[in-house]
Image (spheres, rainbow, N blue to C red):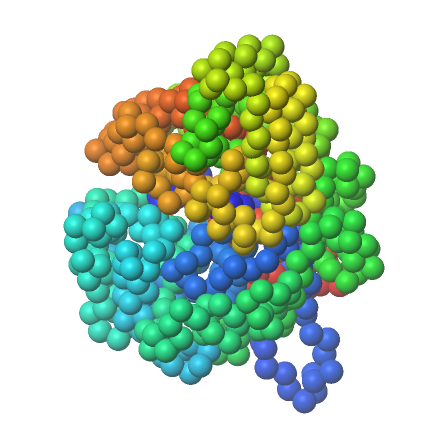
Length: 549
């Protein structure tokens, strides 16, 4: 998930319940008579290192998942994917015009260092995220909050953001326009509170290891040095709802080699392991096998500024047409992932009148065509005045990314004589940095939607988007996406037309090369109950329990 992350979650948010429902009502405190009771420990494997737990700087799935366990905002998703009050004491009071939300915080909420959690922590946190000085890549998710866009544009000071602590327990939030499912949006980690005193004391070190952060969620982060391959979540004794948190501890171990993960799973060292295609085939009939399809699009970004050959549209299209997406998902990934003919994933959004899925309405672009690819490359060589090109492909260093990158390399080199692809596999955190700074030729990248809205993907490739590492630029594309998220957002038909036209432009320009929609194939121990994988959003380990069969 680079960034494997807009606002406005729709009520059609879908989730997959991965296990049968189980009880979840064990107090953390233990009497002397139960002192020997076995602790409930969940042992997880994760695909990459944890970059940060600073709510202002998170932009990737690993960090969001961690943050969702150790911190908490005003609302949290329940087991069915609906927003429910968390730090908020009851439902928000919403003004008749839909522009003002008033939240009351639960009394006696505390941080893990003993400080009280107050409305001021939310005001400070949100304003820190939106402040251009923070350089928060995920600040865009706040765009519905009053003045947020103007602050990001640099025309209004961050202090003018539409959030204000009215007193210690009362928070007022103003939005630009009535916003459907705003309460779901604020379940994301970017909207979590931040303790001003602690953040300022830690400075640039805030959130860089488990000791450099404080927590208000169901768990606290422990044993994370900021760079290592493991970390833990331990039940937070100060959490307001600790009686409904069943797990005592969660261990997280980075496992990049799938065979290692399988061995640990079969030896009962870990309770969850993600599978490669070959393993998915092997375990598909196992009752512990799960493969929920995520709202996650995987694609190639192309550096259109610094790489001479990739500036040429015919070269970009030729590269795209050499990749047989069906072969990629069936022969290489083979874990339930599906070939994707555009940026926007299947089953994300539907036309409000016809109920047609966006992906079907938009169609499939840049489909495999080796003959046309060769012809385009021949034409491009004349325009470039060169018959050769060397392109660096940057990817993660996990097993699946390595196999996908090798498939892409062989596809391009087999069809386009003269092009050499050099693969560079790097740790997840480094790949994000290289992508953000445009240090690549091709980048195996991806994004997980934050809402059931095509613009959750289309916004990524606006000319000034921090996530547009390849620097794709088309003024008409910008105009369409801005209209869809702005003046046309209240007219479903206009917005739908804008989004369809925008994706078509992106594909015609070969701003990216679409590859596949990711399935999260895994094995999960049957003793693990209520582990819920939302199609959009991070799992809530608060609901998980261990029940030995």
